[in-house]
Length: 407
Image (cartoon, rainbow, N blue to C red; front, top):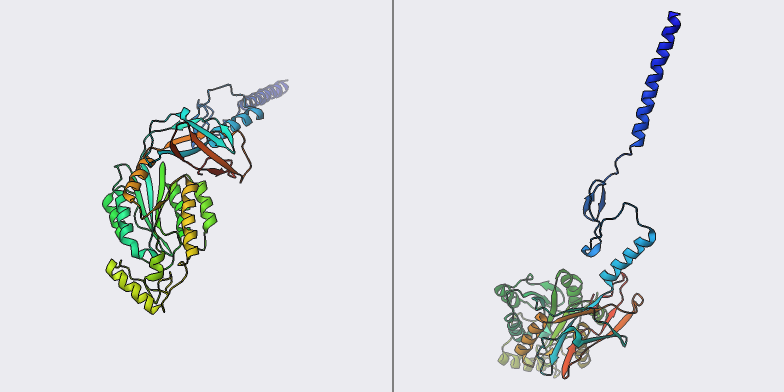
């Protein structure tokens, strides 16, 4: 009997142990393992943190129950973000009187916007005076060396218009593009960079514009523009051309202000003979001697094509007319203005600086979204008499859904 009792006692202890283990197992399985932390954007969150979720643009959603949103709710949130972030078409607008003086004090109600002929509601308006950044893009190809002193003087005149917070970068180009200064407001650095320009062969104007739009302007925030000193004739660009650069400028938000120098007479009556050009500007008396020598050595035709010799590449009337038309279209496509170097550039630069600081910025949500790659025509009107409006005239619907004019 004692043995039987001992056996039953052992069996009882074994049952209690099994039940205890079973109970512990059930307790563990009833308590879920902690959810690992998740990363949303740059924020590390855990289930115990009580953070309100943040959407793009800094919009904070109030805390709700932990029930996950339905697909429909998620789609509505996403569409709302896209509408706010990408559909707003914005553009800089300059308003001038008939004498080219910038007009201040206009209000949102003074502007009207039309897209493809249909009036849009002005949803965004800003008229705050702001500093600007300008790239001085200087042509140092052989054709401009006869007028390089005038170009230097004009460029320095422009930087003299700067205020403390305005900044400039100096870039030159011949067959190659060269960055001569950082973006700075140090006038001494800028003057040294302007005077350090050296001549080379060829003229890659289109590649210089492409470089500035694709590389330099994208790094600059705020109001920005390009002041371009050139005769407009390109002879050596291979990676960019007339049409591609006009389209790039149309899609960018920077304004272009070409300063056109007519160098055709210099090219057809200047340096004669070979394709080597000195890196010093010839004085005006010396220029007359060189023109005579060029005529003699060129057999009565004059010398000085871009690669040497009269009537060379980049010296014909057709090429100069194309160059003039290109600079005018460059200004028009960007919303800027073109200037003839024979006019008073000091007054022009004063106007440019004032215009950049005090532009209006307006925007709207298009009623018709359009298709990717579609070009939309824009017209901005001011409801005041005798005023001239300068703004972008079109934008292209981007592949990423972006519809900002100038981007």
